[in-house]
Length: 208
Ligand code: ADP
Ligand code: AMP
Image 1 (spheres, rainbow, N blue to C red):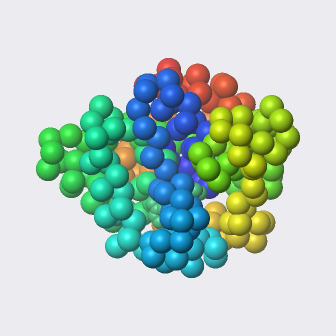
Image 2 (image 1 turned 90 degrees about the vertical axis):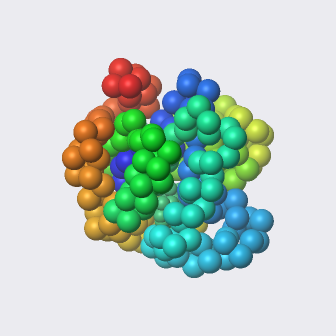
């Protein structure tokens, strides 16, 4: 899944993963789990995440390649938030090519920056299972509680407005070039992410 922070990658990745019975792999979720568990990786990642910067490629690429070689990924997987830089994409392409496979589809969810800032203020996340809600557009059944696992929902530290602005500029600089990268590879698919979540999901299913 490609798209700006807050475009709806996690929301849609979770639905596609459920529909296809394949794992949803979010590098952001893996970093947050490591922060919570107090690992060395988590400590390193937190420094960058808190200020809206990207975690360095040296840390991120190896971690992701390890994850996609786990047993549950044998039948495919959906990547959310990776790749985020051209070197990440190139390393992924190379690793997959060595195994005779490739990325089947890069789905870009398009949402203008103005909408993003509004969305992020209302995002609530489950720190345990990674499910995402929105106070207005996708509220949980019981306020503040995750529908999936019953944990208390939180506001992500990096969803403060100043950090969101920084993350958007990092996105335009470092991640947006991936749209051209995957277009050239012939696998880019684009959806209008300003529609409501169910419609976006239908559009993605039609494309796939
Ligand atoms: P990303 O993974 O791209 O950062 P999320 O999936 O977490 O984005 O979505 C960001 C916020 O916007 C969440 O609070 C989510 O519930 C909400 N959201 C996602 N898709 C839509 C949509 N199509 N319309 C309105 N709000 C949305
Ligand atoms: P996300 O949950 O996808 O919004 O990611 C939250 C934060 O985790 C980002 O702002 C980055 O600091 C970090 N992160 C997640 N994925 C990557 C990645 N592929 N490369 C670098 N940093 C990442």
